[in-house]
Image 1 (tube, rainbow, N blue to C red):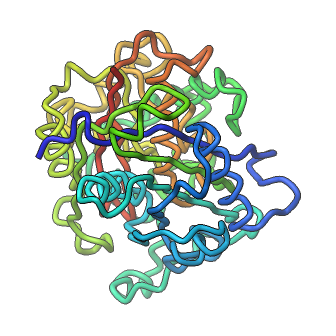
Image 2 (cartoon, rainbow, N blue to C red):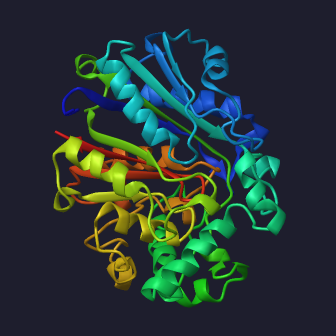
Length: 389
C-alpha cells in the first residue's frame, strides 16, 4: 500500500524542561495537555477538530506514559471517535503514525492527535532495579539482570565479540549526539564531550559506561496527523507520511533470537517499500539511541551498512554536524532528553528538520527523513519515512 499524499503531519509540540525536569512540578496529564495545545496551535487547529487520539498508556513504570487514551481524552475535553492505546515501548509513537494514517484512510477519523508525557525524573520512578512487572522477566530478574541496561550490555558484548566493535566506536555515537546538542538550546546536556571522556566515565553495566547510556528526564510531546484534504487548511506546509512499518522479534532479552540485530530489518523493509525510496534518498536520520549500541545495531538492521560495519560507518564523526550522515540532530536520547519512551521526540525533530525550523542544527535542504523507534530491550521497532513537497 502506498501512503504518499494521503496523510500528513501538520503540527508538533513539546514542553520546555529545566535541568531535565518539567517546571512547577506539573503532572503527566498537565504536560500532555501543554504539548497537545502546542501541537494544535502549530497546526492551526483546535481541540474540537480532533476526532482520533493515540496515547501509549501505562506499561507499569510510574510516571512514564501514565494514562491510556481514554483518560487523556477526558482530561483534554476531547470526545474522539477513534482511540488507540498501543504501547510497544519507545517505538509506540512511530507505530501510532502508521495506525493513525490507516485510520484516516479508512475514514475512521480525520484529525489524529498523538500524545506522550512522562515525569519519571521528577518522580524518580526509573532505576536500575525497577522494571515493569512482565511475566516473561521471571527468567531474568532472579539472576540480577538490571533493566534495561543489562539487556543492552549483553547485546553490546555480543556485537563486540562477533564483529570487533570497539568502545571507541560506541563513544563516537555519544560524542556526535553531544555536538548536535550543543547547537540545540533545549538540550539537557550541552557541554563539550570527547571520546576519552566517554571511555573514562563510570561503568554502569559492563561494557556500557555512564555516557553510553541515555539520560533520565521528564518530557512531553505531541504530533498532529490529518488527511490530505485537511492538510491544505493547516497553518504550515505538510510533512507527508510516505511509509511506515512495525515489527517485533521478542520482548524480554532472554527470548531475543540474535543479540546483534533487531526487528528494524523487517519494519524498515516495509517502510522503504511503502515509501518507494532508497537509502540514498534519506537526508536525515532520527534513530532511537537509548544506549550507544542501539543506533549501531539499528543502522545495520535498516541496511545502511552490512552486519558488523556500523562501527566504522560512524567513525570520524560522520553522523555529527558537518558529516554526510546526519543523525539524531537534536542531541538524541543521549544528550537532548529521554523521558522513558523517546520515540515521539524523534518524530518532532524530523518534522522540524523537514520544515527547515532547526536554526544552527538545520540539515541543509532536508527533504526526506527516516525515523526509527525501538521499544523494550531491542524488542519492538517501528520505522517511519517522512517527506516534504
